[in-house]
Image (cartoon, rainbow, N blue to C red; front, side, top):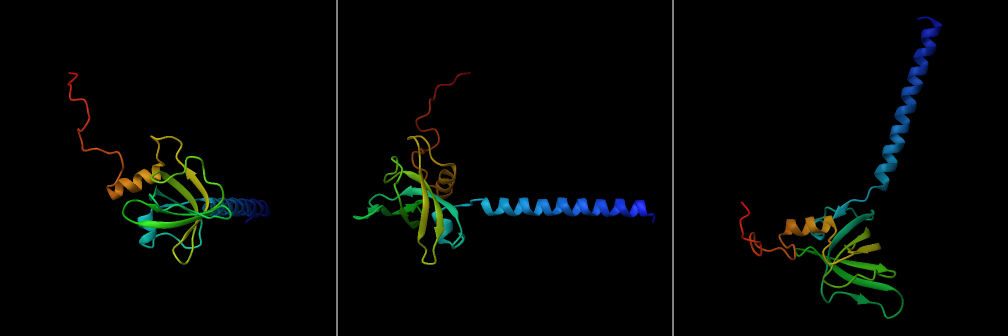
Length: 159
């Protein structure tokens, strides 16, 4: 092999190593910043990671919201109608947060099964539900506001 070929081969090998290293860094950064979604049923079955940031969504259980007399601590239960998860949050809740409404919380599950929320996101109008929450409720067969097929639909044929 001539010296010129050796230089080119070394350059190609270095370029491939550089591209591989850059790809590794990019995928690693992407993997660290991704937030997975888990329903209360998945948390109850043990699918959710402990001490790792993720999202949980569902309906706030009626009568479960307990606000601290001192401070901004709030505890409530979140349900997909099959299972419930206890959530604690310290901070100001969104104005649209209330019992019986769909929310998504971002936080970590501790070793006792308590979800410690860092952020609570509430729906923005009465017709919207976070897609993940809607999917979890559909899987549970408990989607609120759904009627039997054909119920309430116009029976007039437009042929």
